[in-house]
Length: 138
Image 1 (cartoon, rainbow, N blue to C red):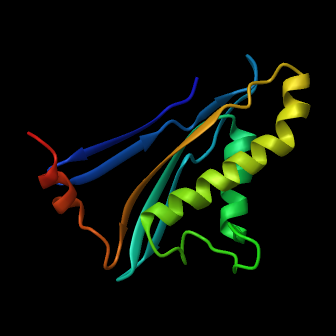
Image 2: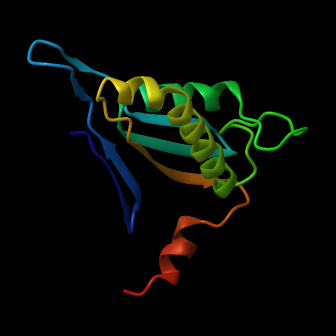
């Protein structure tokens, strides 16, 4: 079992993810499952992952390399996307593509390919989290 959690509190956004993986009694390892993109003055993003490690790591690698959401468009990354919505589209596209390509092989061996990602942060010029927080009922 893996987990990732995001909490929006008055002071800002808090995100956590576990670091342990278990591939059997004698094969326990630690892997980073909270990934940060920080371009001072432009954006700070956090991606927390849970689920199948090979799926999430491959999807994140794909996004770091650049994702073409539409034919003829330039590849985008979390560093170049214009909005958080676009970042979410990039992550979702990569996650879907990875699962489609490796799921048949993993599922043939009865391995679970489910994976999830939480995206949070802020991009300069976009809505501030305090504005979003004030729109929610108390």
